[in-house]
Image (cartoon, rainbow, N blue to C red; front, side):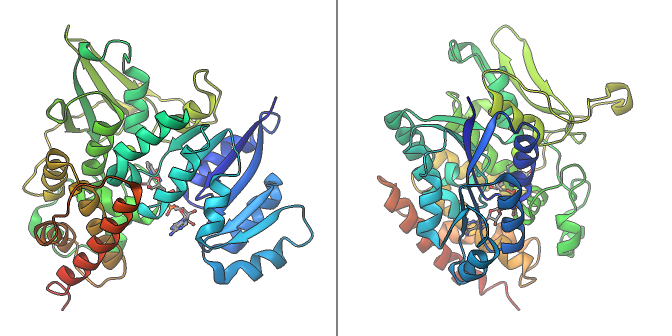
Length: 386
Ligand code: NAD
Ligand code: MG
């Protein structure tokens, strides 16, 4: 029996890796729905290749173009945010959530409400609305699996039957392209330098997050949501080779780690086959060629994003949603060359000082907090734009 799959954010880096695995096993998977923001050409190409039932473009102004491009196929088309939600709830047994940012929140909720397997690469919704997403998953019988390499590693090593035997979770961080730079040197880095990750090839937003280490901050919050471990027992360690994807330490002193080549197809394959495993074309890890594994404590002075994320997690309530929204605004401004690299964390901090709303109770609260935090971040940013 074939499994039906939907990919939200199918044209991105994670979407492409997911499609690569699915297209290698055409006897196992049927593509139900694919979504993209605005890249009609790429969406058309993959919809044709996979014979998808539904292709949705979030930017509604591109719908006529998409309709024309797929007119001679059986693929139904849709456009706009409501159509993205329709794709998310079209009934797939397995959904990859790979939209970037909190734009993925409502699609994730729609997918969860179907009660199938929802694979979260899209970490921002988990940061902003983690508890609500997990509650909804429990209510609707959905299975949430983490695709983020660190959380996938922890998932593989974590003894869910005996969580009290876990002493610590250790998240590894490559340190990003500026791991060896001083603050003074970081002040003048360009967008090109910031998106050039030393190990992973990823979308622009997460590449900038990796350079500020906000990505690790978001992952800290993500880990606290996904695993039954208190925040003071989640640690971060710099590990430049990105070979160990994270570790779980038990009370007896054992540390279990998952290792592999830095290729997202391994964690994605794990979620596609779970609880089984499937073969992938990922290059086997050649430990002798890697030679050595380095570890170091991260420096919160050079990377204030780590401190901000830890503060947001400890305060919880609406703080993680404000942190995330402000970061999305600041990263977009940096990518637009409107602010400098070090302004990103400064804007997040300033926004968190200006805006401290009450804890969200329902998902609409998170959406309102996210929207207001974006306004506040845009105001806070005026100080930094020259
Ligand atoms: P990307 O920028 O390459 O792709 C993003 C996808 O989302 C594209 O298909 C784009 O069309 C779509 N999209 C963007 N904005 C949208 C919007 N407003 N509405 C609807 N669709 C929209 O990003 P990526 O690197 O693939 O990352 C996707 C998510 O996975 C992010 O949350 C990221 O943090 C997470 N993630 C990525 C990696 C990686 O290796 N790339 C690793 C771990 C986690
Ligand atoms: Mg990660």
